[in-house]
Image (cartoon, rainbow, N blue to C red; front, side, top):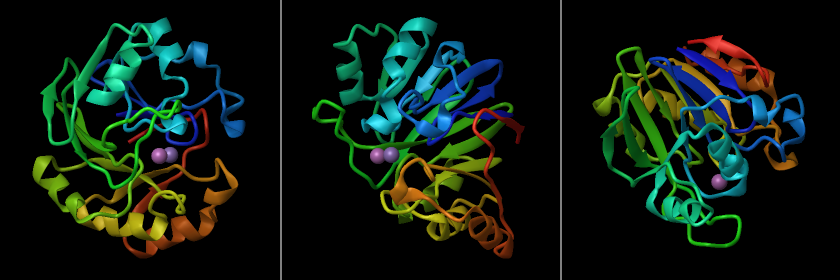
Length: 226
Ligand code: NI
Ligand code: MN
């Protein structure tokens, strides 16, 4: 599968010819100045929770591309009120088949208010299962025992974990998470964007290697095959 990184927790994965964009936050990210949101293609946009650093560019990209937004009920309501027409509401624990494969919404231990203070429902992670492979995006989350359930839903080709600490788990807990979900290939997100979440890349990748795992930290704008 092809993974393209747009900075912070925004990335796209191409699955069975469909472009899945996750947690669009680009225009307010100082590190992602090289990314032009008007050139991002998307067939689906998956939003893990309501915080601005995961949803800020959702409306603009969804309106331009006509992509279907997959998110929880409360964010679905909020985006509907902004005039978005293609939204598929889900909630934690739910599984649904789409044209590219299956989405299962899983527990994330975090909070989820929307940028205007509206109630954002529960934060979620996503397990994507497809004929091309499976992956897990944890969203913003603490390390949680619920992660042990993930490999029962799907054997993973790779996992996408927040590693910036402070607001989410840091890389040491991400290593524990990788063991819990039985996945060796991890892509790190949610780091370096703000002062609170700056990390030492060398220390993080070394810690993964010592634990028999691989941490990928793709450059913003780059695409990796995984
Ligand atoms: Ni958040
Ligand atoms: Mn966040």
